[in-house]
Length: 272
Image 1 (cartoon, one colour):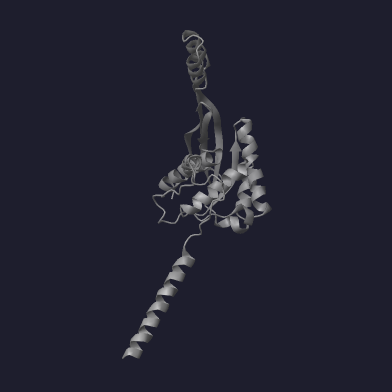
Image 2: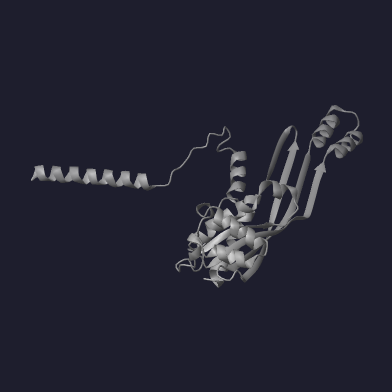
């Protein structure tokens, strides 16, 4: 009996060890933080701000229902904002579109797998040659497509900015004069002079339009438009040689992806 109990104990321990190993193997990888300021106050503030810009998956309403096959073609960027144009191309936005439409359970034919055929379709469609565009869509893998989707950036503009600050140098000088020429008055004036604070905020509006095109007729099925505000802020303050500053806001990448998510959420609700 003792022998069997011992064997059972060994089996139990082995099973527990295997289960723990399997759980460990299936867990998401985690990574360390080599920053010398990790865990400190500046790190916590910077990470709290960065957390707001992290990718957030959207719960699409009809994700349980499979949508029609789609192709995402690069749209147009009609903004003349230099910062945006340096950072983004129409292909970047189309990549976000493919990702989110796939997450919403639309079968997406990836552009990289379609080769020059898709480029010929894009050229024909953008030139207004509907007959040639339709001919392209009846060839190869494109034959399974029901919708062609494109995302266009129509607006990227700074619509508002505000700043305020306090500089203690003037008050410090006044305190020195009113207090006479004593050592204490001089020290008080220096302390007040060292106090300063600054704060600045700018708000941008970015607008995106989506178009859904019937792959058989190349006619427009639907269109929609959405906007989001992007706020960027910075603060700094100091006194008696101690200084602190912080800046942050949602990045352009995150803004574009969120606009794509809002557009895909609408497509998922209306056109599945």
